[in-house]
Length: 420
Image (cartoon, rainbow, N blue to C red):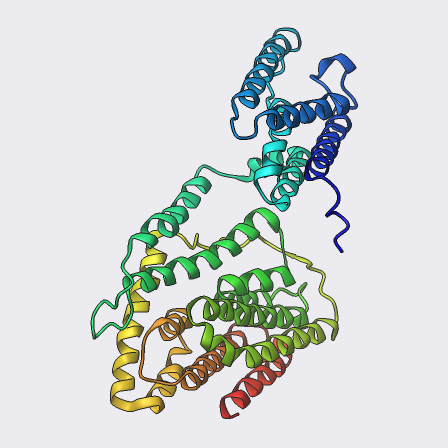
């Protein structure tokens, strides 16, 4: 038997409204502890009463919000007078507390008309936003003039252009739809953009390991090249560079699997075991390498100046390669079958594999999911072999043994899954 069955719904809702209103008022009191007592509109008791007033006026006529609306207008008038006098006497212009008063007044209809989790979410967000004032101020200082333009670009390509595109194949020669084609641009650019944001605003001073983690989200190949060159710094330990390169590869597995989930959920079922094992082995290998050998003096790297992934040229290059690989893949499958696909995957591994893999995941080819999974693992193995070569030839001699050890384990496991 449900214990709440015999409790009137109005009593439960009244208790929730009063409790939430009181909590909001207590939070407002705590936030204004250092201010004169008479300088604020009200605190815990006032907010609780406002919440109760909203409850009463809503319950008087729940089917007609005229009474509730009239109460809201009256409170707004009082708030406007208070705001005017505060500007006149204290020269303060903030509206946060006034807006919170109006939200508190609106809790009753929200609790009656929406699921309880939504009301909890609203109150929780109020608590979070009021506590993060200083953090938001610091964050806004890190934005330059182009950041919001960049964000606007992403919103345009994902929220405006993408929904307008048709989801039928472009032609028999190009086995992808315009929607899938642009979705590929949005997804890959979005993952890279997330890495870009984290680097710029969360981790502006890149530690060696952070460079590997965030760089792997952006491009594990580019990150490997940067770290290989950094290995010639005498203050950086070879094992730490090798560990960071391997971490970047681990993040590559996570990034590619996320793309698989978006474009081909059935294929993801084929790849979840090998990708999970490879990611785990990669992280374990990176941890072992990091703990082995000496610790370098350098614990932070200079902020990297990666290209913004939403630059027009970058997006168009990816789009061109995506279409090119779609056409080439269909031709190779038609002429040479799965053996040709495996060879193509091996060759593509020495380039940027993302356009090839996304075209493979999203295209409609006459090939089994197992064949696509094998081609994916072959392309990844080839790409890892190329990164190993970059580090060997561009890096210091001291990094060769740990990096060869790490990549040998990863490539061997990857090839093993191909044959399994």
